[in-house]
Amino acid sequence: MRPEYREEPCRSALNPVRGMPFAWSLNPYMGCVHRCTFCYVRSFERRADRPWDERYGRSVRIKTNVAEVLRRELARRTWTHEEVVIGAATDPYQPAEGRWRLTRACLEALRDASNPIGIITRGPLVVRDRDVLREAAARAPVRLWVSVPTLDDALWRATEPGTSPPRQRMRAVRLLAEAGIRVSVLMAPIVPGLTDDDAGLTAVVRASREAGAHGVGAGLLYLQPGTREHFLAELERDYPADAERLRALFGERTYLAAADTRALAARMAAIRERVPTRALLAPLVRPAARREPEPPVLARQLGLAF
Image (cartoon, rainbow, N blue to C red; front, side, top):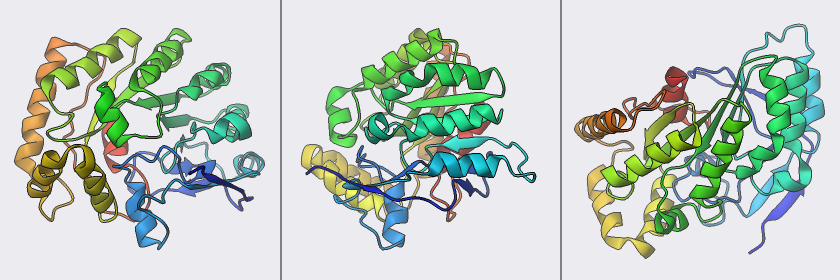
């Protein structure tokens, strides 16, 4: 089924965020055709009584005037030039960006305002904007994270059906690094029993280093209501034994038990010794429950990493 794109203006561009290492987020689109089975946004959509299951990602809102609204907000006398993170609730480089170019327009507005920028994406289209990112970085800090949870093609197809192949994303990391842009790799989520084996983790860390990534961050799978039901149901199709094992492992919890988290952290530390990078965070921090649809593991951990 082809996604429906709805062109709708927005009244505001910047979203205040609480309890995070950044204070403001920006999403040029709402809804995401990447349809990642583990997406935490599904839980927020369910609470808002919007489609969160297989229907999520079939409709994308295009905030046609978001760049103009952003420029007005950045020009306010009260604006203090805090970092703005793009892509916390939807991917700013999903296919719609190729047509509407709203993310690029927002980057240009932030560049012109000499405002710090953070970007989170699974979309290699980000390489198109190397020129704007370089110019923005000459005026204010720019931090960019490309998400690559695994290099295993079968796992990628099963869990991230609408995204580009992992090695295309690693190629994007290399092109960005070669352009002098500070880019890091985010391994999130790490799925116990599926993407947490030493060989798979080491492969991502090594590929990140070879691509020139500034650092590598890691975040564990967490299953809130909405995300839990969809993720486990989708996993049941290709990996039924693993779906059952994860049900038993998580029980009724949203997060893994502390002992399991510590065990994975120790293995990540060992990988760091074997494959040194500038920065590597093991998934040690459990996100606190809160209302904003932001990625707590990413923000908490990468905020400390870089």
